[in-house]
Image 1 (cartoon, rainbow, N blue to C red):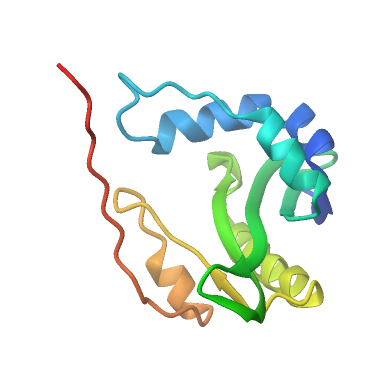
Image 2: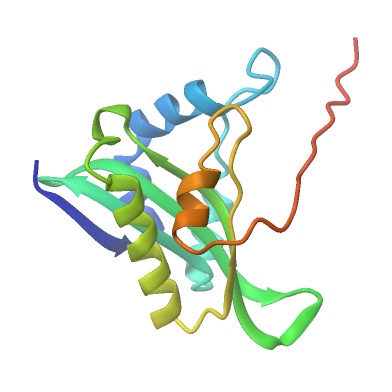
Length: 154
């Protein structure tokens, strides 16, 4: 296994992530029985064109095995503080969740966000696949709880 970690643009990432994003959705998405996977490719491409999309990938001899996506922009409440990163999604293929791959990916995300001038990053974890221990070991602070509520008719 020869893993590499690198920043990529949306077009290359999207071309390669089709098999992985389906595995990701099946493993983590809630309410799958009525909310299908439907990535808004055009919106991601437009955010990337504005240079607001931060994509770090993990590849094994060129094959995509993991990724981390964040939107980078000024916070709506702290416009003068500097750019902040809002995590959209992250995933590592189950076969690669060994040897610290997740920690290495997150460390590289931190390094590349800092190099980009990001002053603060926001990251969440699913309750049914909780990564809090890893995040706290890497110096992230537990600051918020998020809740969802479905308004499905019927």
